[in-house]
Length: 331
Image (cartoon, rainbow, N blue to C red):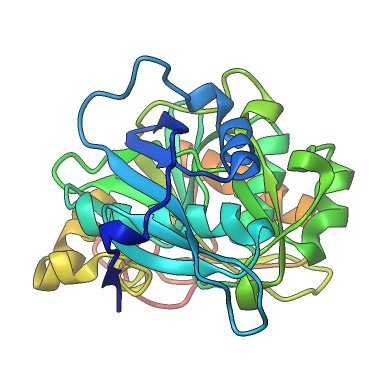
């Protein structure tokens, strides 16, 4: 539960920068110089010296009374509400990122918001959705390293009316266990150091700007939905699933579901009307990226998947594309 931050608790905070992170406008104010420097460096290509037009999320860092062990703490305030408290100044950046996410959920109802990554290849949008630990961010980093364009990591914005995937190009967050993979991919870790946020432990960031000048994509229609599950096995297995089933799976990853109630699944089903949907069991990153690229190619050409059914209407052996609802053979 959030609490309203009293005005008297605020200290002078004369440093404020504004950013347009894709379709999301953010103002960040803090009296902690290195915290604003970190955020401004992480999103330097998003900074707007003349301000941001349209909706704006106001984030503020306020020095808090000393904690139980005598250390100064920091309130993370979003649009006037205290969202969290960073125990040390080293935790401010991850808490700011998390706080912005919370305010997007609360204020941007025009978007269906998913716990998912979104990328673009050749104008075709891809949704990579799953719970924490499924391997979304690592798979996203691998695809970006291959030249894919980027919309968002762990926070997909889908316009409820048009069904288009919109950009919210947050820095890609990677956990400490994936640092060696990121290094092998040749993706620079921001500041070459980890940050810490409470129980999530050490986190690192990849700036989209460090990958390429044109890495951030324009809005795109979804053509592929991937539901990964990291297994650690040496083989990669895929199974095409019906769109209706995938819509229910995506509904389980919604961040603002209460805004849509019973409309959630119909909206998602409409969004995925021209997309193909796959469950992906992945181990080695290179093999998983190869498979996703192959699946996108199949989505383009309409090539048959490994679904074992016979098309009952025509009597042919042609694959039904998973619409029968039966489980497809793993490939």
